[in-house]
Image (tube, rainbow, N blue to C red; front, side, top):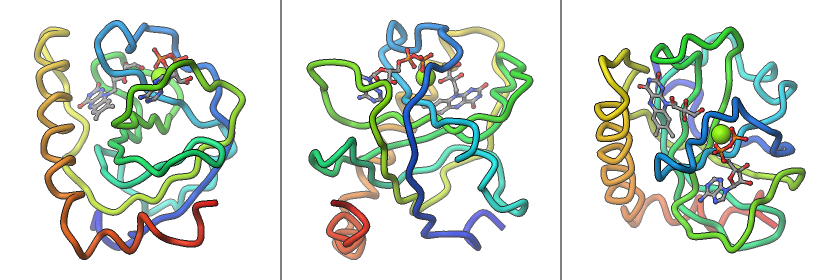
Length: 147
Ligand code: ADP
Ligand code: RBF
Ligand code: MG
């Protein structure tokens, strides 16, 4: 059950991802270092999630993330990639990213073309923006975990 591990708090260093230019797709994703991925409980289902995230001791932003192998790209390594809903002035590789995962949106899917993947991610972002406005989730944004 996707809900059983949530809320899930974790933090780690942002590393280089697969270099596929998700940025050019309009959706940069900050990839966590391998040891953060290895720390996920065995029972943590792969898929698309929403929550809040913070780079260094900056502001806490809404986020969506993908956990898994990206069937569209058939990655050999499991990854945790976070897209923060904020326009940053510069990249933040090497910085610490803290996240709290609050909810599950859907399983990872296969697509026939890149455009369908992009459209689906846009839809995930819009859905996440809405749910994360729920007053009962504000407590997580204000959690002591964030510095
Ligand atoms: P990579 O394949 O190296 O992960 P991406 O194209 O996914 O490259 O870009 C990710 C990088 O973009 C992040 O590591 C971060 O430094 C930067 N970045 C800029 N804005 C954002 C954002 N809103 N959310 C996530 N990462 C961002
Ligand atoms: N990759 C997939 O193969 N299938 C998916 O369903 C999928 N959903 C995603 C949803 C979100 C919100 C994000 C941020 C990424 C998703 N990805 C998915 C990962 C995407 O393929 C990845 O960000 C790019 O390959 C860049 O590494
Ligand atoms: Mg990335």
